[in-house]
Image 1 (cartoon, one colour):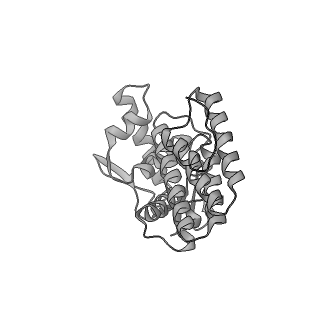
Image 2 (cartoon, one colour; image 1 turned 180 degrees about the vertical axis):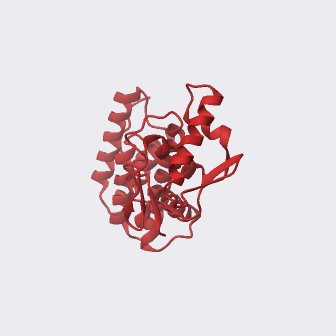
Image 3 (cartoon, rainbow, N blue to C red; image 1 turned 60 degrees about the vertical axis):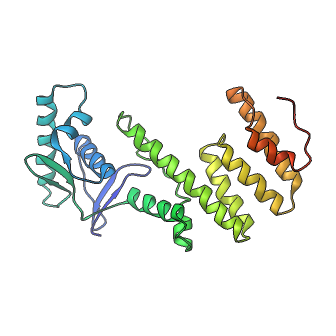
Length: 235
């Protein structure tokens, strides 16, 4: 694709590897459209991006941003009098990450490229503080974590235990208190015959969970660890 949009770890729009300098307002329009991946009503886009002004002013701001982008004579967005959307000619890095994660979750991904795609750790536009970005960040975080779990499960089933542990550790770096990751990690250590590592993993998790939230691991976790002959604290 000649037009490439990067949203992970920062905004960068380029045409044939040459960066396209957009104003902050134009960047936000492009990012918003890219993350919604469909034609949207212009009034909806304007209202979401300019919350603190009137509808008339927000629509004027959107018109101004679209006019400035047209000066580049590159089809970044497609706009009508009522709707606006990102051009289908734009390759978006977030789309590639989402597609790889979904293939893994469907169980149809067995090639290394899709597995490697779940390891992507870039944060979505980390220096932006727009409210509309928060649900998008959380959606991407959850999708990535679920894909890492599915990747680890597949690797564990195929006997590639060390790779499974690596995938789980990537997930735990993003969410240290996610119990499902810890449970699979314990199973992986047991599969390697490293019971001491499994017990240490449980004890570390229990301590972190108690310190952070004041709660104990679930009954499912306790049953898993109890099967290793570990003496569990009373609830």
